[in-house]
Amino acid sequence: MQLFEERKVRTVWDTNTEEWYFSVVDVVAVLTDSIDHQTARKYWNKLKQRLKEEGNETVTNCHQFKMRAADGKMRLTDVADTEQVLRLIQSIPSPKAEPFKQWSGFRVKEYKQYKGLHKENLRDNMTNLELALNMLAETATTELSKQENPRNFRESAKVAQKVVA
Image (cartoon, rainbow, N blue to C red; front, side, top):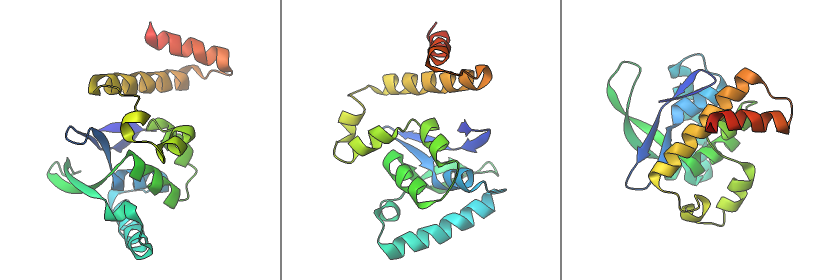
C-alpha cells in the first residue's frame, strides 16, 4: 500500500516478473477523484469495456493479483504494470495525470525511451534492493519537498541532500 496525495494505492511487487503492479481501480480512483471505491470500479468497468472494443492491449494483458480489499479480505484485483499504468493514464483525462506519473516514478523521457527498450535497459540493470531503495529515496524527497516548498533548483538540491544525509 502506498499513498498518493493521501489516497491509498495498492501495489505489489511480483518477484517472478520483477515488476511493480498497481491496483487499476485505485489508479482510476486517484485520476478521476472518485469519492468511493464503487464509483472508481464502475468507471474502470466502463473504460475496460470501451478499451476492449478498441482492441487496446492494456486490457487484454491485464493481470489479476490477490490484494486486500476495503473489507479486509484478499480478493482478485485487476492490476497493471508500469507500462500499462502509463497507457491507462493516457486514457483518462485528469489534472492529476502528471503528478501521478511523477509519483509513481515515471518520467516522460523514460516513457519515450521505454517504447524501444527492454525493461532491463530502462532500469539500468538495478537489483530489486536498489529499485526499492531508489523508490524510497524518491518518496522521501517528494514528501520533504512538499514540506519545504523549494522555489528553484538550488533549493530543490538542498532538499535532496537532506534525504541523503
